Length: 219
Image 1 (cartoon, rainbow, N blue to C red):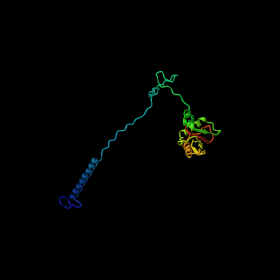
Image 2: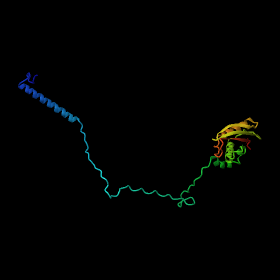
Image 3: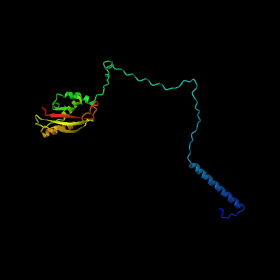
Image 4: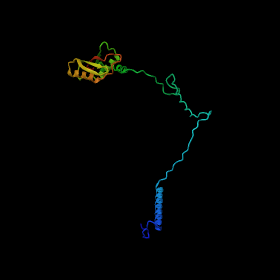
């Protein structure tokens, strides 16, 4: 080993002591430099203080702190006997019972009894099917779809068809021909275009009913 002076240091004597001290100082400088750089490079983390809190119960005899009760909802004014409030409000509504579809349409069927379409259609039913309102709906609906060919005079066609529980029409067929092919086809179209009818009445316990419709010329 050589010192800065260029002399070789031996293994004993003053030169060895100087070299050891020099090496020690050099290591201290390197160590402090590394610590300084580490401290500067490490980010500081602020740790918030911790507080220990002890929960205690409410003192005996102290009133309980409860949220204020919400105000009661305003009372609705009842309608007067005449169906309206004293201040001219809306009249009270009465509950209406559910009416079957075929009964609800009976009024419409009755209003068209005098029409020409209904006069040109007649429906025959078996003896066990006693539901006039339902039959009235069938007559009106077929009459709306009944469009005989022009020039047909003094003839009629009888169509036999089956109505299922759902109101769907199946198996329409000419039971009595009018003798006019186009008149018979128009009669079949009137039945097919009217399908489906309303559901069969709940009081009728069979799954289908067979009806016949007489379709005549219109006046």
